[in-house]
Length: 220
Ligand SMILES: Nc1ncnc2c1ncn2[C@@H]1O[C@H](COP(=O)(O)OP(=O)(O)OP(=O)(O)O)[C@@H](O)[C@H]1O
Ligand SMILES: [Mg+2]
Image (tube, rainbow, N blue to C red):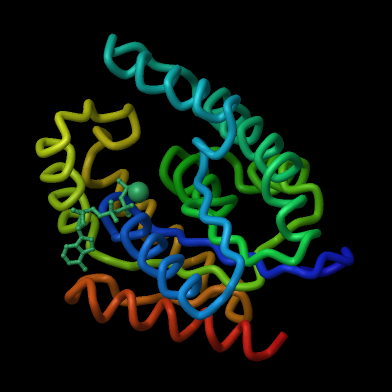
């Protein structure tokens, strides 16, 4: 990350619904802890109490079929991120920890930008303010056809009796735009972002993710 004096390493997991972000991040955290790394596994938007309130609010709104504007959605996620960066991520990085974050700023670009059509310059400004100069050393974009990811995520929701949020219940066309958004971000930031084919077995996805993280750690 440019422009700061932190000692830790910041890795983000991005991708559409059901691409395997949470499963892969948990597996990577376990493996890296076994190797002796001091790992903080966190997530957005639920990584702080404020973020959990914002996420609950989203889900409650969806459950009553109410909507909000895409711009309001952008700033709510940015608020969760601003709090998360300053109270959780930055202190962990400053103390030299390895931070694995399940979704981060690229999700806002992909969902509110490519998915909902909010002007990308507004997204960039909101992300800049929210992130306060912190950007990942490595971002893993787990890439899977939107239909496949959605069917995985919905099977999991059925198992957990979880209610879908307003974003998870969007159309397939929306999720296709989100996927294209993540791939466009990867093309624009080839040094930071690695695309992992997440359509195959989970073990292969996890191995590719851990290998990429180890390469970044070895280079620091
Ligand atoms: N490569 C894979 N092959 C088969 N099943 C997978 C694969 N990756 C994930 N799954 C399964 O799909 C479901 C969703 O995975 P997971 O929760 O890790 O995805 P996610 O990207 O975190 O989703 P969300 O965006 O909804 O948080 C889980 O049941 C998981 O076991
Ligand atoms: Mg998840």
